[in-house]
Length: 313
Length: 293
Figure 1 (cartoon, each protein chain N blue to C red):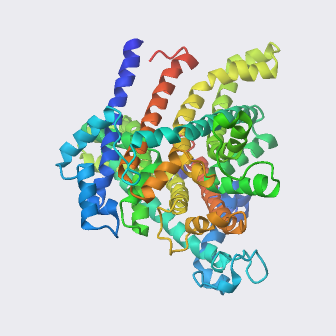
Figure 2 (cartoon, each protein chain N blue to C red; figure 1 turned 45 degrees about the vertical axis):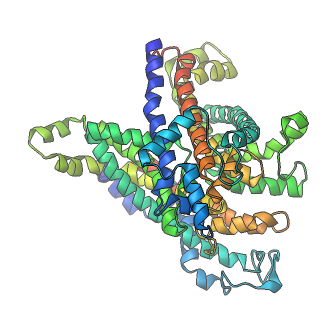
Figure 3 (cartoon, chains in turn cyan, red; figure 1 turned 135 degrees about the vertical axis):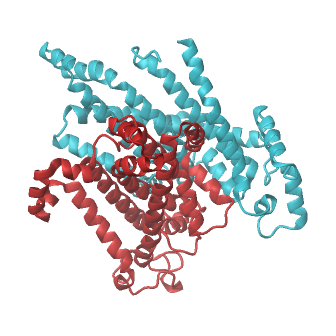
């Protein structure tokens, strides 16, 4: 089994390499001089020269890439063109809100979506099923920022239950920290929840039609035990897979959610960097998000063995 | 699709005679999707008949007015009529959605066919596609936008780059399953050239799942355009698109929530309609292939 785990890990190498090339090459896709593009329309020739020297743009393309790769692998992400601070430091300062948001969202989403999916599968065809699945289609269609503003309007502006925007670090106390994360997590989790609920329903429905479920029911097992200790574990592989795939939605959604709720996280950092064309920051955050995605999915692949011991790769 | 019709033979011919109403009642979500979509398309095409306000005409005396008889959805910070902006904004969204759907399905189909049939090309192409898919879609698109001149064409290109790998995967999957079929082997033995096999025997099988995927791509593209514009990296700000209108309303949300909620609602409704259409198309054509993952 170990050889297989190692082989799966090695398989991420070409993907990571492609990610690195794409992330690096984005700057060079644009027509014209990259240094001039970064400097913007009102730049003086001297500013353009400075940027070119700072980013090593006067080197040949291959050398530039190797230099950047070498630095990145050593944890040196360069300096921001605008704030002149090390990119690594900028990222560290913004890490906590983003991690907090993704974790609370994942917890809320999985805790709500899996029971919803199981319920819909158990009552397949009934009005409960139809209602839950219509809700899932709605969740797909309402984008993060629209849901975010609707939630802000209802719970913060009209009802005044929760703060409108902003973020409180954990050090300021757990309650304010949580209060500021409720609406962002719900907004961010909406489409993710819809996705998981749909897959859970389909997957559990398939298991419920099998013989061992009928046997268990005939022996008089309670519905709850039947659903959660027989049906759900057998249906777990597709659900776990979709949770992994959904991390991409989540990481992308973080960028938008942080903008809507004015949360000073990595997403906000990269959007600001993109609007200012602060290239080293863009590269670093893009790379971090992509590498996170690749590793989460690697972890999920390895988790299959735990979820379903029949899988031995 | 031809297969589906042929397979159900008699039944299809009979059901065709049953008329529109019978079909509408049998497939409520498709009817609902089509109805909403038809309304949105008609509304945006005939936008000039539905309002007498110019979507970009500034009226300093009517700034941030709530919905009223004069302005059905209120006005924005420089007094432009929001109803007018919203229906004109739909033009951009639908245009981008349809263009991206056509572009990505044709390019994705081409790459997918090659990738599914040629192992060497497959190895290279799929690594690139996997890499592209590992970068969160929104980030890839805005990063691309950051270094390109802002225009509708750039927006279409950015969204297409993100969506093409998904189409390629789908087509490749279909090709891989079809090429093992006995009739392909028969075609190879009887001396058909690769191009002919791909176009005559494999391509038709991809069309059903591809058309379902096209609806999802269209919905995703409309969402993406709004997202990019909302973040300030999309359609040039002087063009009223749903995302741009919402972006302008951000600062005044507490004061004038209608600026964001009106185009946001239209956007969600349109995407919902296209998704409903896609879902029912999928169930209709072939439930096995186009699972939305």
